[in-house]
Amino acid sequence: MTVSKSTSATWYVKYFDAFFITIAVGYMFQSLVTFLPDKIAALYPSFLRVSYKYLLLPSVAGALYLVITGKLEREGKFNSEKAHAIFFGLIRFWLAAGIASYGFAKVLKTQFSGANDVAFRDSLIGDLSGNYLTWFYFNFSSTFILIVGYIQIGGALLLLFRRTNLLGTFILLPVMANIVMINIFYGIPMPPTIISIVFTAALIYLLLLHARELTKLFFKTVYALPKPGSSTFTNILRISVVAYAFLSIYQYVLKNKYIDKTGDPEILGKWKVEQSSMNGQEISSNAWQTDSTAWATIYFLNAGFCAIGSNPYYYERTQRNIGEYSFDKSKLSLNIYFFKTKDSLHAIIDSPEPGKMSLRGMLGKDSISMRLSKVKM
Image (cartoon, rainbow, N blue to C red; front, side, top):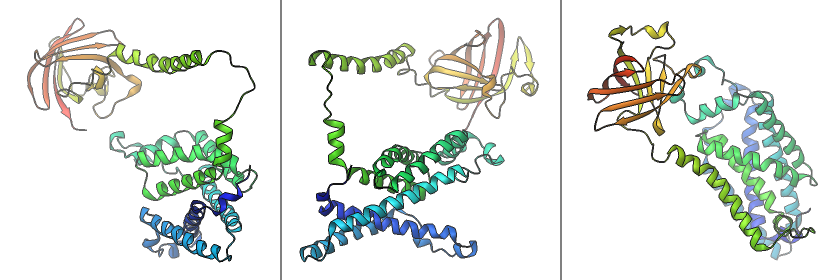
């Protein structure tokens, strides 16, 4: 499948040829810094670093190229088809170099290095930014990283050849589009986000050069097979498929009342057990150090769920005790049913204060009282 010759002279092809070539030149110039000695690289001027404002230069370059080549073409001094052929190759080679470098960064384990750092692992998950969470998450599976890396390298190699560049574009575009969404919505720093956006936009441009042929392939394909039924029956079946997919989940939402059970703001969050007693005997505040069943914290979650923690400083999911709670603000009553132990807590809240509450009631057959304080998170 080849690019139509008639599209080479269109204004948008000329514009984006110049747009992406300008970006490619800047990208390759910026990449040269990695080959410089550290002392010289430290002198790299800050005004050349990647930023959204530098997309203005390619935009202007594209417009100037459009005006200049238009004048030269009218004078018979410019061959738009030959120029497009050159730019088409250079854009492909630039994309191959840039995307393959990120692939090799994954294979050689430099892109996600530092995710196993001791200080990083000892941080609270609530204190981590989206950038660090993403870094830690992707580093969890080295196999996944290698697969993505090899896909990027393989797709980049396909871009180097005109016969396979469309296949390479199809392979790389879903991967790069996913990376762009992760970079944007998880707060990845500006330079890699801009680079991923530019790479993805360039891949889309290469794909759109074949828009006419691809439209015929994907939207006008006629099958030789006979139709199994009428159009009315087929449309009903299509609607039924979508309805089934929606209702199979929505009935679960209604069954569990996820829509209405959003949590009670008065008690939502993490509460530390400051003092407790059972059957009149006080439980030591350090009991959690030797007894894994001791209550150190209570987490009141959304959708009416709660969890008991045996450590006041972090929640150990391997020993979790999760239940469902109901809170009546008017009666100051709290009921919890635990899924694992099948026990129930029926308690009354005495003299509630902002950030503090005292409970007394029955846990199964045992009387229990607690004084809780809310933990800022």
